[in-house]
Length: 76
Image (cartoon, rainbow, N blue to C red; front, side, top):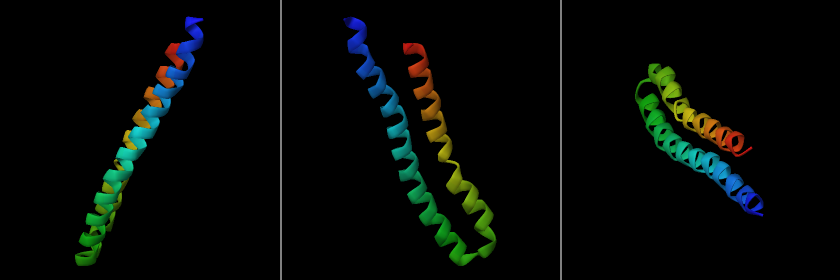
């Protein structure tokens, strides 16, 4: 009976790991994207740097996915 109660909490933990990391990445990308567009409006050669800085927060989502997989794997 106790094992049946852990399944929803494992699913909740895995979903929070992905959901919160995705929300944090989206929040960071919004601010970085705004700054990158402003910088590119002044100097067009900053496009590459702005693109790279915009993509970097996506690693947070990848880490959240790894944590979710670990949670699901350790729960059995």
